[in-house]
Image 1 (cartoon, rainbow over the protein chains, first blue to last red):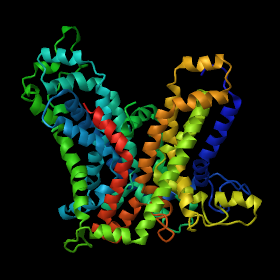
Image 2 (tube, helix red, strand yellow; image 1 turned 60 degrees about the horizontal axis):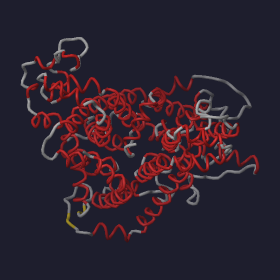
Image 3 (cartoon, chains in turn orange, cyan; image 1 turned 90 degrees about the vertical axis):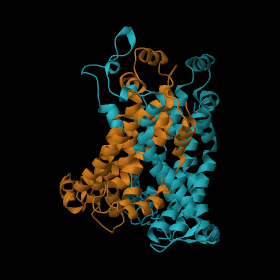
Image 4 (cartoon, helix red, strand yellow; image 1 turned 180 degrees about the vertical axis):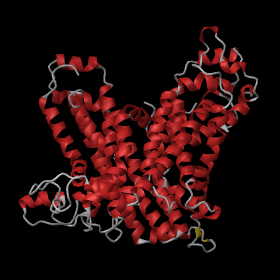
Length: 273
Length: 323
């Protein structure tokens, strides 16, 4: 910005930001103080002790370790499949000619508006009839299938600026469409593919509704946490730790990869600009 | 399928060369059939896996939800065709009519609050992008927290006893104050709206900040030269020129609020006495806890129509842009 920044703007911004962070700050404080001290609120300073005891006890209390690996597995597999299949399809839609190309493209990229509630009942019946209830495939398939609605749009938008000369040169040198994709286009389109991966990872890690309905034995972290939230458990310290463990990975990924997220999120649901 | 494409007969190791400078493309040397496919079969091969996943998780559910909405299905018993019966029952159900009002208040409330705060913060921080960077991160972080977890944090703030942060702040002025924010029908929906807005501010902030940053420097420079005060620069330059970002933010937040589930499930569970159920929550409740699948499907179709109405401009834009 040109000129001097007005102090009041920075001050107001700072004040609001501090208020904004209070819920997160509160839960962090709750997780490192004995529950006896925070009975009347985490901000009370009648006596003050720091302890990591809740961080040690929580693993026995709630099935967090199992849930953590379940979440990591589900998010990992879904993210991998989306990152693997999206570039090939985006390339085909952008550079190759085939019947129904435009129709299929329009259907796929507009599906991003669909609420996930739409899949609940049909897939519930389908998985039940196929005996896939409580199978990881029951959530991975819709995770991956729903992601194409925005991932293909995002990657295809990127391809609009892809130099056509490069493709023509490859064709002249005798590359077929698949070889052109593998050796010319794919190596040069990795940045939108990573953006897709980050968005998909965050979305699948945080997902609550589908795993809650389709999984029983091994459930991901948000499902465990939602169950804990519904009980009258007075161990606020343990509950705070469970919440922090649930959100730690996506929060770190989110903060580290902010830039890719910003690029991605605009294509996910917005216009082209 | 495309496993073969990506991991199959790859070139000898080493960086993949491009077509520049007359160097041979590694793939061109391959004799494999995959590499010599012509355009059309190659295209179908490349999009086939996507089509399979997409059909199972979008096309089939969409068609099936609409079909089931004309049937009466309870639990495992055989579906019975009832025509528009479910829809007639829905709109005669005072619970569902209340749900529509709730969804309207929730959606508009969250969108209005989150977009106006996000827009305002974007302009404040545009005055000093570098100095306010950590502040932007703090607000943005709320957006990166799992919705389940942010609902959880708000449970702790809105606790009915005096250990709830909100009660205890009010207690400074009014000792002994304790209100069950989430347990009172008059306040539960508003508590929910505030909690949802807290996490929803991140995206409008991001989009509006990008829009303000995109204003040409020369425009702002000229305004400073003419001696415009920061407030009038904000009012006459930043606000109008960041409108495209605001429009996108409004659309996304409307869409997300309409489809909301997680935060309602954890924070209020639709209660007290089903007063905070939106359409997206009502369909879950009827189909997955009452096992009235046809009835739930009809409610889903209503939600779908609401979502489509909100999305018309975006759909038109995308369809026109799909080349």
